[in-house]
Length: 116
Length: 111
Image (tube, rainbow over all chains, first blue to last red; front, side, top):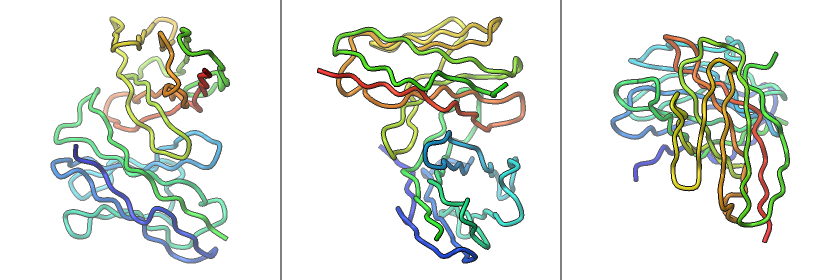
């Protein structure tokens, strides 16, 4: 069964450093999302991406965050200058060609980001 | 009021028991509804979608009450492997794909 993959599984960084989290979506999926989950809290939507554009973003997704699909396969989330409060699990999710109301969003295994 | 509200639990039940989880959502214009399962430090996985007429998948039954903005999940004949956190998830209003998650209800099934 096809899966969403994410790298790295765990990233430790110093405050103020840039990090890039990578996701490889399922091959025929065209809608991509990033969510995050701070330890002990709920999963929160960050951004959705379709046709090489951001289609929606949350208040959390400020100027420190950016997304791109640099090579047609990877989907990346960049945090320019990490803060302590960015420490969380970051999940990539993807959904197939036509995004319908009940289309499942398939989640990757996540990247645990620790900011020191 | 929280967008999606769930009792955090934990629910501790013996194997074979029936357990029910409830969830309420605040936006009456919400489009679609799901139950996801999350194991400790893992990604959310879709358990089942929740349709207006209610639906069943094996031991799992989901119900939706749009008038009361209430969603439920019933698990019959609990197994040890059902131990997990169950996330109530709502997809927003028209023209949005974003999923809004509840904080989850933790279930622990014991032998």
